[in-house]
Length: 195
Image (cartoon, rainbow, N blue to C red):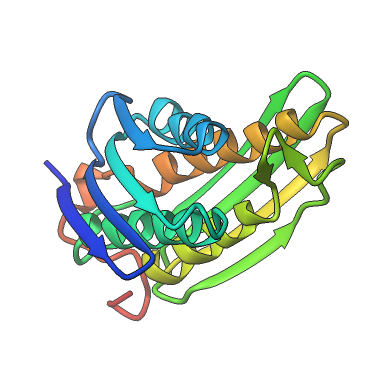
């Protein structure tokens, strides 16, 4: 089983995270950001990852540190749980719709962090949640997962739908990229021989 438990404690946030890449989509989030928690549930459910997360932070300042640090922790967890990356598919891509909205996410566990973000939300906030922070989550994830990730919202009128399609497509692309190929279990998926 590809599992990892992590903690990250700074002056701004305190986070504990448990990740099982070979789970069944169970999630348990203790975080005082309901919309963000709803988005993280999409990753568990549609990626079939078990994610237990507890995050507290300086929300009296704003949610930036908490959202970014959750991305950092989750990316770090994926990188560590994948280990040497022997036998993984490495690449994943997915489209996900929700009513009028459609997003595409492409993931490569290349060892080279890079985020391409092509998203224009139709409004700035959902409840009190600043949608700009979602890019910070994905940047934190990308940097620590050592992955190249392209995120494109292709259509959308409702900002909630736009965000949810991004997280669903992200989950599906991660699931593909993390998938284990038994026939290549001793091979690193790179012509270089390392990632």
